[in-house]
Image 1 (cartoon, one colour):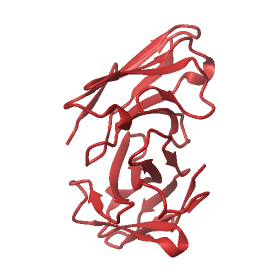
Image 2 (cartoon, chains in turn green, purple; image 1 turned 90 degrees about the vertical axis):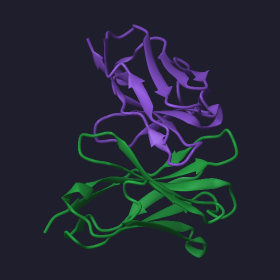
Image 3 (cartoon, helix red, strand yellow; image 1 turned 135 degrees about the horizontal axis):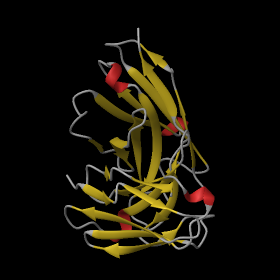
Length: 120
Length: 108
């Protein structure tokens, strides 16, 4: 079964760029038909979908974040990444990466999440 | 954007009782791409149901999912103490993918 693990700085200063990486193990990121997604959860709140990069390399972002978000993939490292520009305290959240199957009825897979705090 | 509405917001029940959680979509969702998650404080969401009605690995059979089109249901046949948590539905068939706001199942 595919496993995912987020990594990156836990503290980012306001106006800077938040950068996270998701490492996929147990399968090749480029061989299956998956949407590789990022999701976040503000403290005490619900789940917010940020965006994905698909098996074909196409991306789609939440319209509310589109102007500040970039998701990319590094097939050689079996990783995909998230960048959020110009962060504010409102970007403080637990960030999750996930793999969502695009063509089969099969299980989704999530990482354990990583807390990112935006503060000076 | 597909808006998912979950009801009730909070469900107060006793162990052993049956829980019925609703997820209603603003437009039709493919059953292939409707999932349910359970989340406990301080933990990542745990996949319970995928493809509307398929239990994920290791999920006990007291959890079941059903529905089609715009109306989906998660049923917990007999609540165990470890089932008191927040439950989210999600659709990932139409971009942008969306989550419902969650239903909290708490102890009466």
